[in-house]
Amino acid sequence: MNQYTLQQKTFLLLLTVVTVAFAWVLAPFSGAIFWGVVLAILFAPLYRRLLLGTRQKPNAAALLTLLSIMVMVILPLSLIGASLIRQSAGVYERLASGQVDFGAYFQQVVQALPQWLINLLERFDLTNLATLQQKLADVAAQVSQATARHAINLGLNTFDFLVSLTIMLYLLYFLLRDGQSLTARIRQAVPLSRKYKQRLFNNFTTVIRATVKGNILVAAAQGALGGLIFWFLGVEAPLLWGVLMAFLSLLPAVGAALVWAPVAVYFLVTGAIWQGVVLIAFGVIVIGLVDNILRPILVGKDTKMPDYVVLLSTVGGMALFGINGFVIGPVIAALFIATWDLFTTAEEFHPD
Image (cartoon, rainbow, N blue to C red; front, top):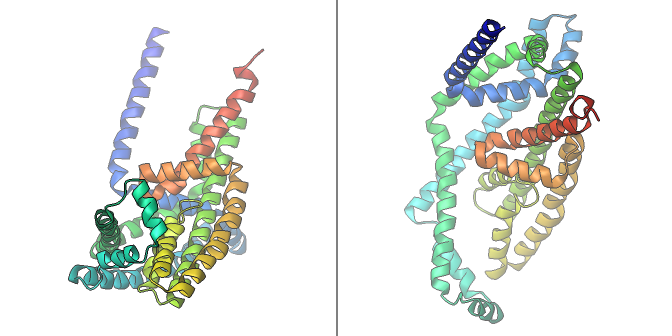
């Protein structure tokens, strides 16, 4: 018995070591692998439909699904990315040359403040408006320069991006074709009863689909609407700000407002009253309505998680894992809720 236990422990140690080593080897391409898995889960229903349409030919169905993904997802993103890089480069050049001066913009805002607001600032010991203005200008300049710099770096690192994209598409093809058998083997390897594995795996796939579909649709809608209103009001580089709003809208409730609200305030205090009023009304009624209506329907309803859990897990996931965290965070939260729910309801854990 002791010898068998020793063999067991040795094998488990070997299993752990080779698993960690394999994960270490794959770490440089973790982003490509992660999105390959996500897209495979997301487009699995389309693959199954095409599999029926091709009379059970997995290779043809996987190839057609891959082509559909490239047309529906990758090609539009590539076109938007190319335009974004051009606009970002133009904004960055104007910032570097001093043509765009955020300090001057904030000076206009400060000069337009009403007396009651200045008195309010003095009451809270914020009388040094010049220092406050400089700090706000520095922050705004750093955010804008960082946004433009990251967009330019994407263009400079085109080769790395193409390598990751190729790996993701290559992996995605096999995940679509062999996904069912791979899932069956993973389920078989997990040392839990069938009903627990079924529930946890269902939660995992449901949350990924709901989170990706919901957040991306909300982000795309808010970014498109924000860029459209910026273009209508004559704001420079509307595509850049629209993409930034789309990215920030991954943060529920407040995301897109972090971009359009300061612009609306600037319009109001510099005398562009109708532009400021239109932007505020459009931001609150149209952009805000998209978030308040679509996100609970597409994300919270399918994941069966409260809105505050979705918000906290999304923000926390993005803080830890970057852009991938808007998927990883809610998935961890859903598995946490499902696991504890299983623990509290399972008879074997509570025999009394």
